[in-house]
Length: 315
Image 1 (tube, helix red, strand yellow):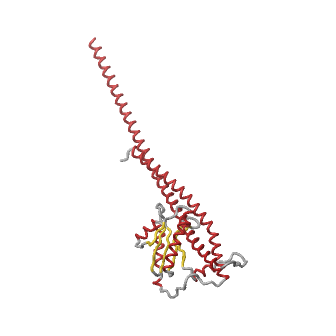
Image 2 (cartoon, one colour; image 1 turned 180 degrees about the horizontal axis):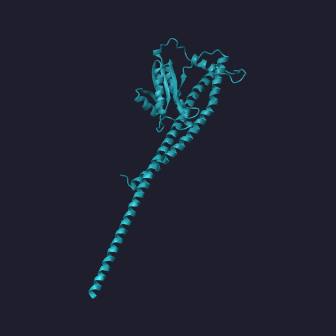
């Protein structure tokens, strides 16, 4: 049974835990802001790159940058998934829902498959599901650190693509919804084939003026393609980090609510037990007082009797 001292220790522990939760909640809120700002700032740049590529495709009859794969059998395809998860916990279903989405999407894709995981937590989930990851990258802890991660992925990707240009690369990550929450999404990154070119040319040009192409076509296009790949991965990582911190913020809100409810229960138990203790002390005091009064009364009666006997003897 809990005592006043044990309840006091529990209340102090709950207060300390609440302080930690509030700190993590504040940090998550701050991180959400910086990553969402990065995504918002990147959208215009990303759109500009796409328009630049569209302008070159419309101005010149340029072949796509990947060889035709009509002769490749479905079971000979190489599928690579780059999955942006988290290194840290306390993120709710952030990694679980993403891993399930990746595995479900894999079932619809023919060919041999491999997974590049960004984040130890999501890698462990894939291992539990029976899917081994071939490469593991650490999750960046700031907007500036995303650049280094994307460069690592691009270098590994170029090495892997040179060995086998039949490979298809998909990017999986969580993206914030319009109102609240997040959802897992998939983007086809490679190959840059006719399907990719067609998806770009379907975008509307923002003005009536026809773009003018200046300079070497092929070198400039290659720079735009590299910028397109870099920005696609950077944007996916920033959206994933924003969603991760949004999930952590929601988890800390739930934890804070649970701690508040626990503290209410502990305080109620503490005050109830303390009141019972006070009541017992008052009862003891009252009982002692009653016993004392009874003793005094008995003593008075004895004294009176003794006095009466003395008077009788004297008479």
